[in-house]
Image (cartoon, rainbow, N blue to C red):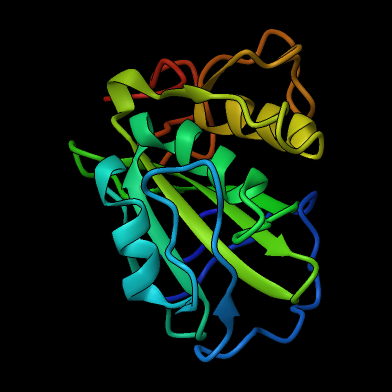
Length: 202
């Protein structure tokens, strides 16, 4: 888990590592029609910000290109499970690989924490970031382990360091910290030491 994609650049954790970025498909990539969904992307539509925004508008999704040129889909955490499943299962989208899962703490009361999924459609070498916004007081979201088994340890790390609860995860045991450690040290309001009580204001 790391605090990446925030203004000024990200900070990957030691466990996350770095993955070389595959070449991204240009905006002129044409997507075939997807069947079985009333709100699926229509046929012969470019995979671009406007098309993805329209496809996921019902879930509150908004899409733009990040400064590094990658598409970024932001939405409320409540809409993330359906959106992630469609991204994984619809042939027109085909994001079959979870490359990384990270967290941003913006320290704002509303939408403070964001779970960030870095997805790849391996058939065309295209990547997409999905930002699911959560309130700190209700930092809970459905696990993505049923879609991408690679989410298992990544969600455990995010739960341990940021206090996010992943519903349906097979087991959120700690990976990095002692069993009796209190608080979530990657939250920006975390205070270490007995006087601070481990964590403040979250």
